Length: 331
Picture 1: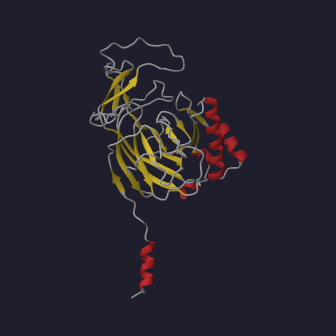
Picture 2 (picture 1 turned 60 degrees about the horizontal axis):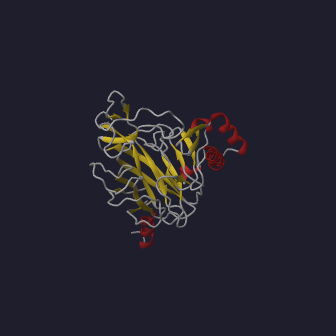
Picture 3 (picture 1 turned 135 degrees about the vertical axis):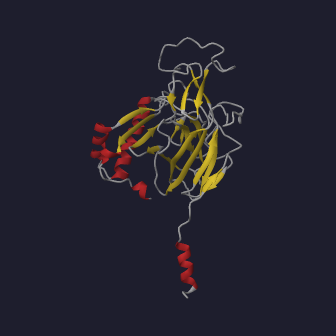
């Protein structure tokens, strides 16, 4: 029989099994803040299965869970071992619309587009003359304005808000975006994406919400097709991986997201932020030289206007990077 000390060594070496946690919040928040209570503590590698309410606070049953509009957030999720200077990797495994109703604005409030005729009282939501109801066919996974059934589109569920509590006591509302993440409204934050977020507090304090059944680039209506979602994410930890703001990776692209609030969120400023961070990422984690990263961005980058309010995304295809692998996938 081996000595007891050897048996203890073998047991201590066994990997900790990841867990799946199923939870639905009863309290929702309109700020990314370290002051909010923790909804759930998880270990790195664990999976969270939960639900979000829509941007007005309505849940999967159509019951309103908040008193006001403004992207109510599910959270906070405390990730064991996360410390300032680390980063989270939030893998979006599953997003599903979970009720047969949504809404959008009915005109583009920015960019100078001419106004269409105002919908009549029987078309817009009662009491909300700026909101247009949409139907969601859960069986066919399609959505359309209720008054225009022929204008039907496949759903592409996405999270509008994802972020962590920012540094110090700063508690931004869930309307803007910034270095902590926030209301990114980037339509590639959907199944198959991994969102990277910097950590500023012990446990990171992750929040998400503002589900959309569908949204084009720019969120031109001032909304996507706002609705509630079933959400499944796996949260991993990158120790010592210090990043300046949110990043995204999927099977085809690596992307840096440029947005800075509360400073004015201009497209020019945020394009510069996204481009600089993408170049840094390519150099530090994919092994490109500074000149190679500049040349790659110059000939292969795509720029997405995530919101007309200013958030910009710079992305390059993984296929163009070559055989190099990001060190972040091995940490």
